[in-house]
Length: 120
Image 1 (cartoon, one colour):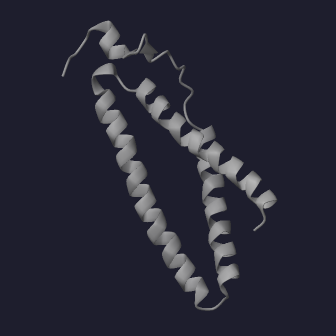
Image 2 (image 1 turned 45 degrees about the horizontal axis):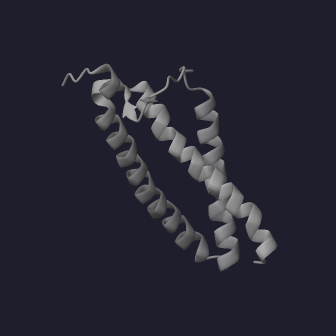
């Protein structure tokens, strides 16, 4: 793959990474202040779990297809399936309830720290 072909791919990967970073912000904004830790940990846990399951599923798919086709065709099929899954995720994301985001960080502290409330 030439250097010129890698540029758009790198750009798309950066955008994808930024999108996952915004997920944390959205979850923290939706959670009550006393549950910020639980919300953040929960989203990271399910991201890690999804990564593990995704690697297992796509690895199994690749191995199954690779038995009958060559390497390049197998990779193409795996990425086509991943694209369909990402399109479904995008469709589901557009159906999410709209929630107005507020400023979670004021002067370097979280909203819970600023308000002084610390209920458990």
